[in-house]
Length: 294
Image (cartoon, rainbow, N blue to C red; front, side, top):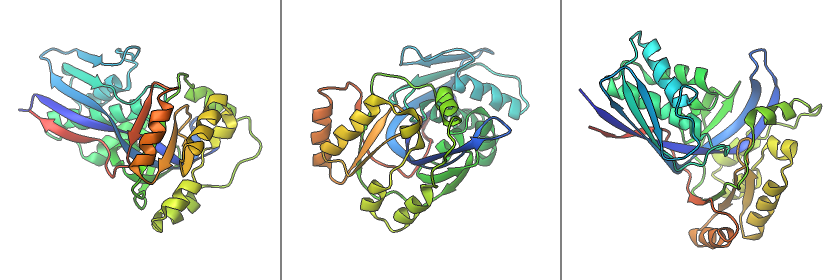
């Protein structure tokens, strides 16, 4: 019987993000293209011989109790397989910045579901895991797919689209946090709704046009929240040679696209003079995946 499973958990960025009206289930209708990137957390799960679920995290400030999505994932898994909860030690090695609009909590949740399922001999199918994940967070189902995908409904209806062209992604997480709940409340104050940005982006992806993908980056939250520092970073990325720049999710992370690595590295050197959390990333075609079983 397996005793330890290690899972890689990629972050995501939004190539497009349109927010619709509030649904009856208190989620918002969304239409967005999400892209997995090679900035990853690592989730390691092992049995501990008790009935207690212990959460450990390398990042201070992350809740380690039942409010953590990873904890909720473990409880939900045992409920789904109709088994009494067993003791687990779950270690989260955080590389994805928290409260950043990069689905760090959601991808860790998906990784936990994937890893626990492997630990217990694949009792559930991937589709069944996605259903559990969708009940825990709207971004969780995408984290199973990864790659490039259109997310609609409340964000849990996932349809893969053509891969993003190869490029380099310079990502900055400024030293401020954005409440996703408050961001969506601000979205409800609108009377005008922007046109769906995803259709044009899908066409650009189908054409494999890096130039068009860079030009068509869009996020409703950029105007809704109008965060001064986000706008400054976006302008700075453009001035440093990015072919396109945009905020991810409800922010405050901002990313810029670069065609070649030298230009991206030069931008990173300049950005690190002002920001501590700067990352060089690339798009990837996968979601959470098991990297080791012992």
